Image (cartoon, rainbow, N blue to C red; front, side, top):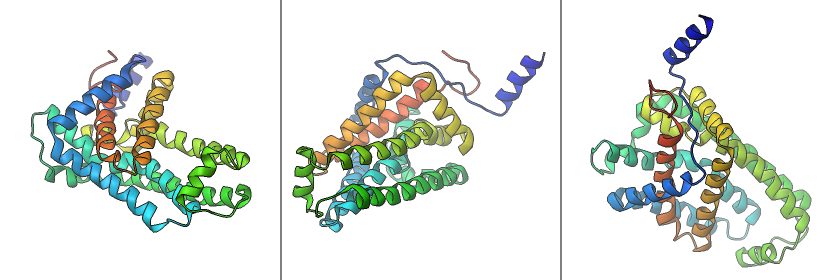
Length: 264
């Protein structure tokens, strides 16, 4: 009886059911994301150009201060789940045959503004802490004079300052793991079912815990797409970021059972 009541209470509170997915799921999500891009190119590419413009602006403003640029670029990745909100809505509208208009996606945050705001604050705090940690790592471990962009990349490719690289990427991995764990399905869930921020983040962590191998592959896929975008002087971000954003929506659909249903 107690277990039955607990199950009913959980359903009444709307706590989502997390499902297991296959190891090849990330490739299926990318294929569906590409399909969304092809079906809704104008609004999708609008967000892609926004991502590319942000990357170019960071590079331009901090051309000779790469201790700041690297932190901001990493922060760009930390905040990407929030910035891709419009892409999630495009995929959602396409599922419902509601068209591919850009305008409704620009203010989609209003649908669940309070909880999305809480989540944005969480990501913002993580970003600020990471930015400070990044500067500290540079100050303590970067031994050469700070070069321009080409010089900085050359040092990385030549594996100079190996101690710095190990510490920097180690610390960055900690922050990236935290953000990825709480954001795998959080915003899509908040947009789709008016979920509260805490439950959405717990469900996101649950999705990672239940599908560790698949989620690691998905995280690596996101990193590879982002790196490719930056290596093409941000031009690749125009296409790759919309595909990843749309794919994230489909990841949410696979990982979280619809409200009122059990695991598949």
